[in-house]
Length: 168
Image 1: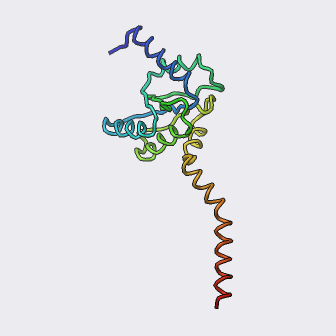
Image 2: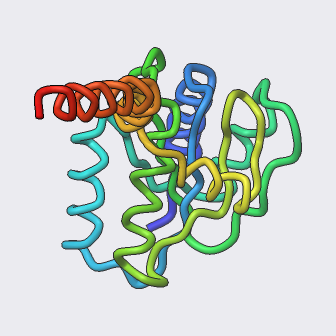
């Protein structure tokens, strides 16, 4: 069923509103995705605070034309959806890309990242895949603490070994 001009106007306004609020979004192509798989994807993304919307390419293209993002819009081919943080103040800007990428690996060929927006700039597929492989902030903090703790832990082990030799 074709969309009426009024309905398209409402959808376009909604897309423009979303794009004006976010600095990060991931454009996703999907083909052959079952209803169950789509539902599982939406639930997993929602749990991470990520919204997922299926879009008509023409309407999404029009919404992107008037946006304040820098660079060139990536090619949006096939059936398109986009994922973005529900909360524009979300501190984990890589969560959307990471969540979609996890499902891209899981669903093998049914879902794929085709580009996106990061830090108010358009990125192509390779740029978004690099962003998707960045660990979460929680993991990065853990890695940082481990780096800081390693020399101290080595020092304590050395002192313990020295103390053990002196008591013998």
